[in-house]
Image 1 (spheres, rainbow, N blue to C red):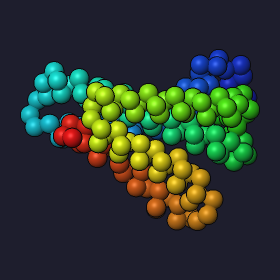
Image 2: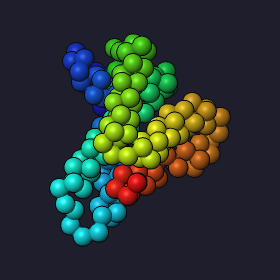
Image 3: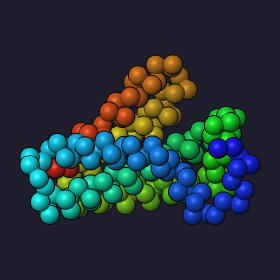
Length: 168
């Protein structure tokens, strides 16, 4: 999408766009695969409920990491045709709005995981947030072309998160 393609985007949609929904859908799908593989046979109601809550918590924390990434990379995004349309790159959302949104999503997702799934899944998901949002985006990406190799650990975590959600 180009910057001109989305004039006057409603504020709620700007926040939604920050979560990089297509990427997060893939993350949650891979976590769900880990959940399904961790449950032998057909899952019962309790397992389905835990799967739904696990997917919701993981979606929120992954969306928070994506929003944080948009904030940190807003200047780079503004120069790239592929990402120039993002609300942070266009200056439609302030740094405080993007950071606050990321924080609220991360806190809500972490609380869901901690209370209704299990603490291990919450901590692993939070570690994945730190790995992507801080270690990969802030530290590695500007320093080394090996960032994608080292940062790939965060991308490999969703099935592990799903397995941990179901097995503890």
